[in-house]
Image (tube, rainbow, N blue to C red; front, side):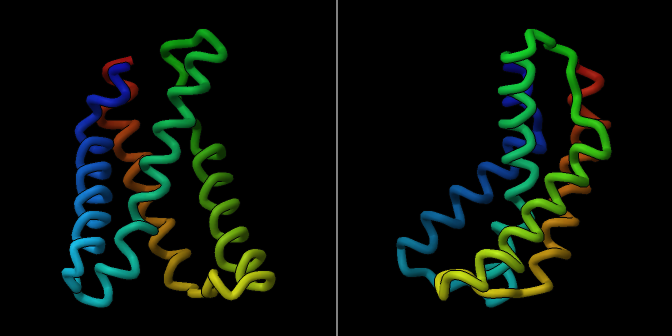
Amino acid sequence: MSLFINPYFIICMTIYISGYFIKHLGITLPYQIRNYYADILCLPIILTLVLFILRISRNSPKLVLNKSMILFAWLYLSVLFEFILPAYSEKYTQDYLDIAMYSIGAFLYYKSQVDFIEVSA
């Protein structure tokens, strides 16, 4: 459970939820924020949840995700959302800048793991 008191995770969730409510209130944010904040936040949120599930399922409370796991998650999201899904659905738009945003999110997650998760594990 200490994963969810990670300051990085709390900040990411707070920003994501705030952005969600701001959007539904009809408030217009600047283009860059509106289109890219979720892409930056998705990997830190998803990987924290994945780590939580892995720790429970493997009964390993000190497990951390290594660099190759984080890289795989970044690559998976990039290929899926920027190449595969846009080819099959108009709902998804190919935007290579999203890949850069996923990279920032992967780095934030890695940094949070180094700064907080490994220390508290």
